[in-house]
Image (cartoon, rainbow, N blue to C red; front, side, top):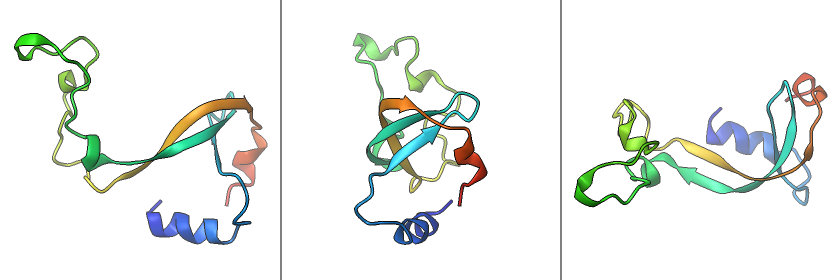
Length: 96
């Protein structure tokens, strides 16, 4: 989905409605939205602070696709906030 497609769908909704993320179809949860992030703002961020340039276990710099030039820098992510409650599998059936 592109930003334009998401905006188009959201423009058809009540502008005062709260936006949440329904995730995990097999065990659904409703999550708040913390905000958005653009890949170019974080793609090469190292999540560890190790002396000597070493990367801690789990740091994305150890991943094969770290800084992958094929990943679009303008990708937009809706960043999940906190889990608010259990969701409903029916949401996937009525998804617009």
